[in-house]
Image (cartoon, rainbow, N blue to C red):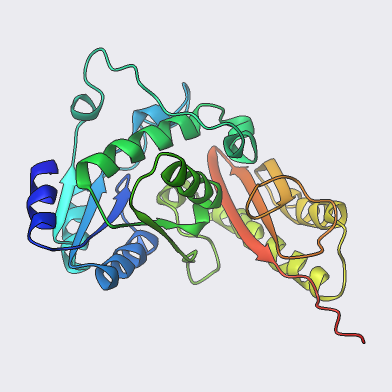
Length: 278
């Protein structure tokens, strides 16, 4: 892959890159289509990264379907599908990992303290291997996108990081490879994540600015659904991810909830009313 990327760049081609863990869905494919628009060559990777799973998480059970993934990637215009095995990217004796000081300490990082070290490490390795001009990540994983942007700046990667909007199922559930774990009744409970975000935006539209009120509202909606266990609901600064008490400018509301045994995340940007008086 590295030699191929070097040859392509030497010929004057630009490369767009979409890293994934496979079990592709429309969210992934939308990122690939965006990459197809940006560059001459579209590269996608599939690698279920063990470094971002803590002990007891679903690494072994994470859904995999390489043949289906390859067919979907080809149909979506991917020129090169880069697949790897664990020993290719983490050979025996591997011991170098990337950390970041502030952004990983918020949101998902509080309950998954090693997760983003694994994410940053694999993304940096893939950046070196695929050597892209553009890399496209989904905004459903908002914290991940913010962390990758920061890492790219801090480590001087000459790569433009592009965010793709959340893609939802017809019923509003944010697309995720983990949705397949949900039973029919659990899926109904999972729909309350998006509903809670919608209801909170209505409150903001009506003039509510207190984060505590918004968090309580979302929490009540989600907790009323069976088999839900809230990890966090937060209202925070979109850039620093620091908690906000008052929404005086656009703010991120992000949440993580276990529905049954399945951990789901979702988010939205809340836009407060603009006071045009005077």
